[in-house]
Image 1 (cartoon, one colour):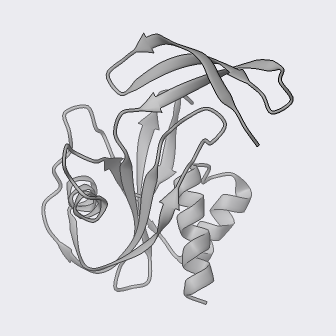
Image 2: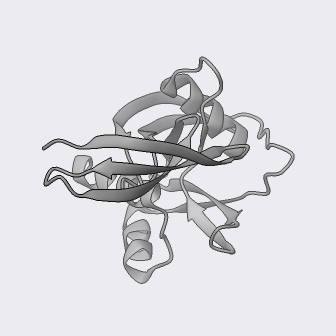
Length: 176
């Protein structure tokens, strides 16, 4: 199918995102308007499992939902940083843990309907203690749950974050 951008107008530029409004020619010749949130940088996220088999989560405030959400550690990649380096850095910064083993899961597009964000997902194990290095605007609580508890939290609505849900399901798929 063929889609042609007839006009593109940038309507907002912020610290983390830009927004464009595009007018498209659709495959049948009609026109439509699409809004796109353009994420300037990609991110990486990690489902870390400790020696006791518990998954390590962070609980932090997410302003868009006005909630403290339970998530796997994640963050935006720095300029020139590859996803693997970024995920190791984020794990240590947010949890104070270093991973001896890191395994790639997949590249995830969390909101394909309107956003260009990409998140690279990983598993981490062989964890050792290090030092937490939170950003000045980060206030994080660390929580640990068994894989079964994490699944139940998805089904009960206690875990809602897409990258976290995907990582937990991927873990259950690979580690039955």
